[in-house]
Length: 230
Image 1 (cartoon, one colour):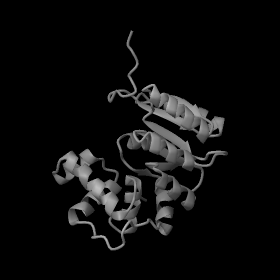
Image 2: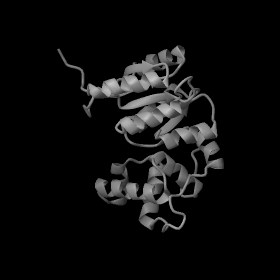
Image 3: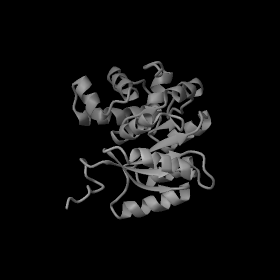
Image 4: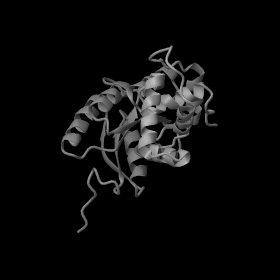
């Protein structure tokens, strides 16, 4: 009998946890995702409080999911608050925000809380799977239409307005981050080690005063380093 892959098995399927207050949405997503060989739905919750509690139990048992699909608008603890708690307590778990419409303030708040990206609820099923895979690789995934709306009013805080600007190398790295490249891919593209790429990314986040690669990508779009996806 073949044993199922463990939660920390890099060769196993991506472990996904669903959070949405609508049961029909959870059932629909589970039904689709369970047809994919590289994704395994390991649990679900109807609200933020239940998700935080259950994820704490799973993490304590060494069975934490890799990615959480998080509805933003829920009664009680909403998706934004839940995302912040999850990312603080379990930084190894990536969160992809899920919303039914483009609301700049809500999505910006979700990204500030640590979400690695988001998709719209009316997105094709393939896009949902792509967002999950991207988050698992440490990459940024933003719904193109929502990204365009966000950049119109994006005003990300800068930790020090008098800080030195990014170096040319850091701008190259940031442009690749905004395109969704992981550290290994950045290293290959710029002929540097993955460790050096990771150091550059950390320095960039500190210099521009943001907490996540997603926020850095939006900053790069706003500053004209890359263009929003069509």
